[in-house]
Length: 205
Image (cartoon, rainbow, N blue to C red; front, top):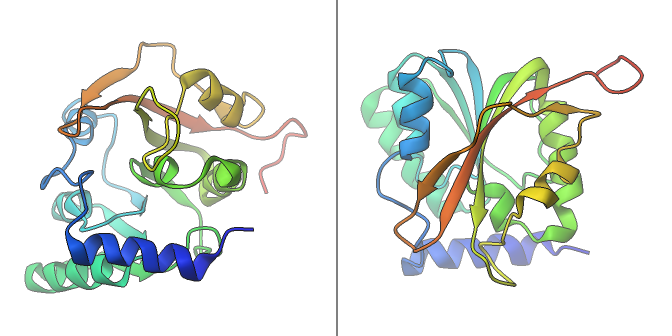
C-alpha cells in the first residue's frame, strides 16, 4: 500500500532541496500550442500535480477558472504567494490526488507531471479519477513522459500502456498524430487530447 505521508515528505524534500528537474521554469510549449490552436479555451480546468504552477498562472491570466492540486506544501505555498501578488482567483489545494475529490466535474484537465510521478501500481486508480473528474465530453490534455528506462520517477509512460490505461470504453483518442515535446532533462513527452466518454452502459458516474 502506498504510504501517503512518506510520499508527501519525499516530494516536499525535493522542492526544499531544489531537486526539481522536471520544472522548466515556464509553461510547457505543449500548453502554449493547444492555446494558440484554439483547442483549449477558457473553461473550468484542473491541473493535478501543479508544482510551482507555471501553467496555473498562465491559464488564470487568460481567463480560465483554475483549480490546482499538489501534495508538497512548499510548492503550494510558493504558488499561493505568487497568485496573491497577481490577484488571481485560481484555487490551490494541498492534497494527495488519490484521496482528494473536487466539488464538481471539470470541462478540462491538464495532466503533465502527475501520472509519470506516481508509481505504476496506482495508475489505474488515478486514471479512473481523471475520468470521474471530467464532465461527459470533457477533455484531458495529457503529456505522456517517454524515458525509455525502468524505474522512476519520472516513470516511462509507454503509449501502448497508456492506450490500455485510458481505454476506449471511457476515452476517445484523437485521430491526428501526437505532439512531441522535448524536455531539458533529456526525455520527451507525447501530447494528446483525449475526450471523456460515457461508459459501456451509457452512463458517466
